[in-house]
Length: 225
Figure 1 (cartoon, rainbow, N blue to C red):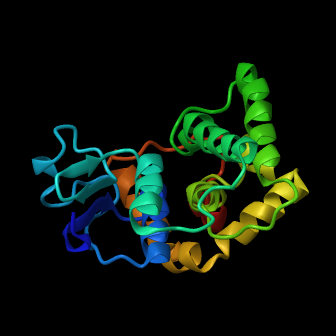
Figure 2 (cartoon, rainbow, N blue to C red):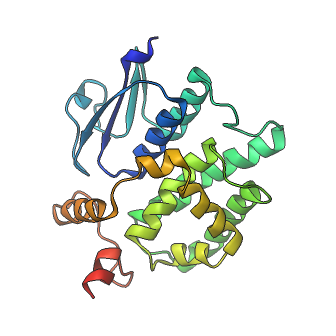
């Protein structure tokens, strides 16, 4: 497979695409980016996905629709020293943290309010993140590129949500996540905050992205208030 055939299909401001963009920048591989507005489908996507799910990565005949798998593929295919820890136990902690972020934290950007029955699950998720990040400084890695875009959108999109506040109440974890946001590959591929807010509002108004519960102020509501 040639690097020149690498293509990423995504919508603008998507946190999952942000992960892949950060990884692509870090491994410094040429690619073409087919991007649409948030909630829309980029041109050419239908040829690879019946559902229209994004992000989607194409490399030759290989088609990937899971951002976590894309990150691992790019690291293995193009070389990414430090992508995962060297010892087996630490690698398992990193993979565990990435899995629970996708399973529980990321849906909080779009889903219903946190139910009382989910509080214990939130605690387990944050403990998994703390276990993976404890005693380390953020450096370019699969974990940093995986988690930082979700944290950025939690702060931008639902800053007053119980999930965002629970993370902010854990100073060590919050510090680690903020430092991950400052990594060159993450910061340079992040959307402009004002443009992202406008893009998100357009998508919400069109019904393409669900609005958060009324009792959770968004960044837009806080600015307007």
